Length: 311
Length: 310
Image 1 (cartoon, each protein chain N blue to C red):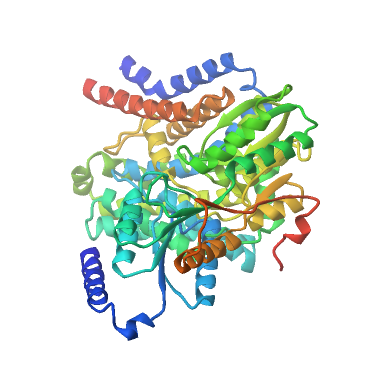
Image 2: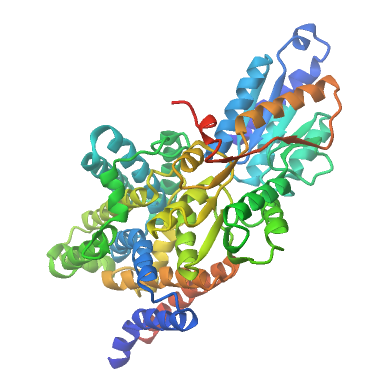
């Protein structure tokens, strides 16, 4: 039991050790400027990875989120120019939610494998982004509303507005998962679908709902990225799905579903972001950076396997 | 679907080959094939449009095949267009060696294949309508050195790995700036040509080097991201950011002071030059192996004349 608890904290220990090693290697890591940079750099991915956690808890998988980030950002920017900030933000989130509904429908009603469903959706949505934008940024001349851009730059209580979004979401969504019957049904469905079904949970609905969460949060992440890049960028979000999945795994969630915690996913995101930031600060060759990041992902998955075998 | 397409192309080619002497066919429009590496990059979008427009002015038809940075797709596309009987191919190869099969196919069909922007090492490349990459790099370096008073720390956000164009520009830059006493390159990272990446790497470069004097960025998108990081760190005007390409957002960046300088390599003029060179070649004119498109440094002094008209 003690060993279990210890293994459960491996992600946190990894992050702390990683931070300590980088801090010892460069004086620049622990400066206020760099730490706020890290928070801002992690914000978009945190929102995305929290959505991914829902899907993975429910026993699924979503590869389409990177493309959704790009589409939602471009849609939000376009709508914003015509109908105002609020409409733009809602349109971005709504775009993601709609794609999530489609994913959920295909997976639960048409019974297509989640990997295939969302792989197809990833390619299709990327195509839609290019059709929608003609491959150019939105708006082409720049000029998103100042209040929206300020969201990517201005601060509240010393921390960027940008960073408050994942903080609030973490609190609310953790409560949803841990304290509501819905949250428990997500864990139950992912953990043992048959048992969940027999105990009266409508598993298809629960699974479909996790894709909607994931899509909507990816939409929100796209809106945030548009604020940070001061435009909707059709090329943005590439490979985000892989980073998000890696973060969830680094956070110790089981890829089979039913096991994982949102706050640990956030730790997983920070492991990825701090690693990238630290290697940049040390000016480590970008090719080696890829090797290092790939290695960390595999190591995390290996630890995950080890833990499941022990049980 | 693809098989069907190839089948159709093949039967079309057979039909064309069967009737070479027909006067009707001889009077038909000249058709050229065009293959660019990407169809989602503003630079290639503008080039593709310009090629189409210039070809139309000459009374030509254009077959365009998308390749999306997929080498197999580019090779297949060129083979398909050759099968459809194009008179010449204008290609921007995805990389220097990966699509040489496309050049071989053109040579086998005895039609010219002219590289535009990116180049190939294939011996079958008819010629290359190029930008003078090394010289552009040297020009950026000279401009930067002047802007920072001849000394200081420089961060380089270079182009994607394996792209000879960006490597050449970078080499030209280092040829001038690398040897200068007092100038040190303290940060150098390769990466994708996106604003996102420019922003993130520049943030980290500025943290590691608070006294940074200049940021060299591989293109305007990367530069605009870097400029955002500079502004966020409250160092706008203190850290010089340079880009390349002269796309409209880049020019606006120069106008509002976010970028110190960009190099305008006008994709419209470039595309038109490519078509003109192909036209000249088909008429029997002689060209050198490399035909250069001229480039121009755009900074605060001359940006107004280059901004896109509203």
